[in-house]
Image 1 (cartoon, rainbow, N blue to C red):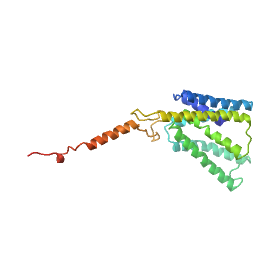
Image 2 (image 1 turned 60 degrees about the horizontal axis):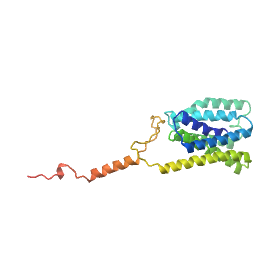
Image 3 (image 1 turned 180 degrees about the vertical axis):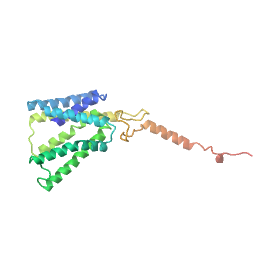
Image 4 (image 1 turned 90 degrees about the vertical axis):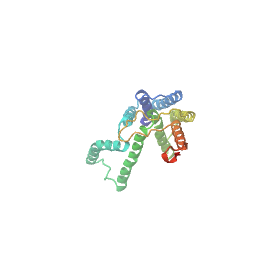
Length: 246
């Protein structure tokens, strides 16, 4: 449940704190997704406080990664070093209490735990790169893809149940994704670049080379190419090409 609330919180942060704007279709998609999440929460019969805490903390984490002037890999390294003492203390405590798993079961289990750490780091690096280069509200909507894939794995690979109540909630979320994606595709096809200013994300700090390269619009590119062609077609005014009358 928490992974379905995270995107909605990300959209709110993008609109309220980062000044991002949504059109009517995008607001409709957000409202429909929120309705689906609310339906799933009501069907559970209790307040999903663990999901709310998870969504709030991860959304704030994403906001920090977006505005911080630190590249993805160094930022993740700093986070890992900060959490390393707590992780080692937890491993030692679990081993002392007889609940430890690492180096206690088998080498295969130890290898899976290590590989799991690598597989966790790769998406976090990708998230840090992506959050700095696209609107945060768009990043929020895209995060509905991951829990949807988890649901499909649970149903089709692990044989978990999927009743009509879940179908209604997830149907609203999937319809919201379709609306948001269709609106973005239509707007991308309709918009023609007319500005001569390069496009840059204002929320990405310019430090340590972490900012994305600004894209030069097609108008500016064509103007530069036209000037270059004109300058190449003009005759050279060097003294060797001038006719000197004696």
